[in-house]
Image 1 (cartoon, rainbow, N blue to C red):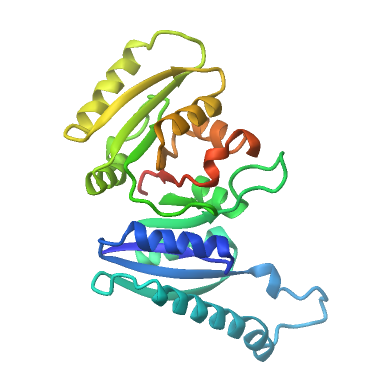
Image 2: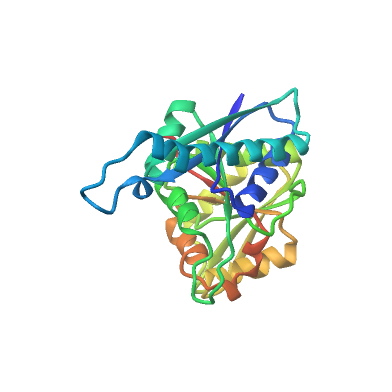
Length: 282
């Protein structure tokens, strides 16, 4: 059974990610862990003379959270998930968000985190929300980031942007291999060169390694030249009608250019294209 973590803040954005996850893993035997983390700061009295009262905490924070989780579980049941393959569990944590996520991953042996991302409202804001960005960069667990406007479609075209510097064990790509096998998707391996230079011998060797790893999978290699990585990815995603983008967290330079330093108006595809981020296991 695959254990999937679904963090929620009860927003419609997080609800959309939950819906996406249920459809995404529709035929996979899964244990879904619905988690809400209450910020530790909410429980710290502003006045040093005050102390935390258990009854007050229970009625002010704990009960409303449990009611909201129960409401989300009712909404989940209305989606008619796969009763033979899906089991759902409700979790609450009080603490700091990333610490809580790490704790649950270890305790429940989580394999995948599915989280929502909310489109920024200002032109200078980053693409990914703070919590999602923190999980992707600070938690070593495969993460599926689902934009608020994403609607589930079985992935038929999957883009894999890579800098081709394989500083990781290829086993990290197993979730991507499983995905394209299961969905019978076409894998598009994409490399963007900024300076119109020929590929070095080592990078050519790495292309061969990737092709060997994905042997038997419908795949193709694409080599683009553009000074701005995010623009090249944007063009590629639109022209190929990509359904999902996959990246390795260790390709941090690529990753940051595309999702952390780019402005919203320049990356329209991330308003509806999910992002699968792969991590090496601890």
